[in-house]
Length: 247
Image (cartoon, rainbow, N blue to C red):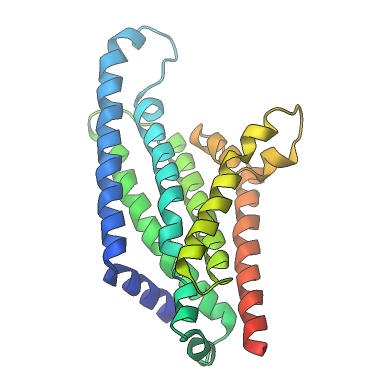
């Protein structure tokens, strides 16, 4: 499994697309980071006298991680579309399936290899607000909770993209389908907010479970939701490839 994960990550870095995405994402997030700093500096004198006024964490770090979540939602289909679909298109999936390892090991290896790339991107993003700790005070607990939420969100994106990639041999179709599903699960909360009390639509929303963590609230319900999404789509992928190998 570790060899599969390492090869998947190596294959990503051999692709110009991955390097372009990594560079463009960091440039865009760096620009947004500087924009948040500039805005905070412009209003700092106005809010300094307000008791309990938002600080660096609320005004700079958390908005940056929110921006990162949206950007990763947009780029994740471009990176997950090739995980299995390209293997099927190149007719190497049957060769991979015949290797002396289980389908579970293959799927998990490809999943963790792709997830490693996204985590590298997230860690590079985290370094930006952490650098502010040198000259200001950060709420490390809130920042850590938000980072946990971003990690679970990224892991969910990857699991969904992995499953969609296993359904087709055309990476472009996988990318479009993954984006459509992720976008739907992101905005479904808008419809759920119209109902009072518990709403299935709100519960299914990826955003609805991410926002409390950006406020420093780590609930087992939110963590469990992401774990259910991750495990469910990984198991669906394993079952899909297992059935295909038996056929």
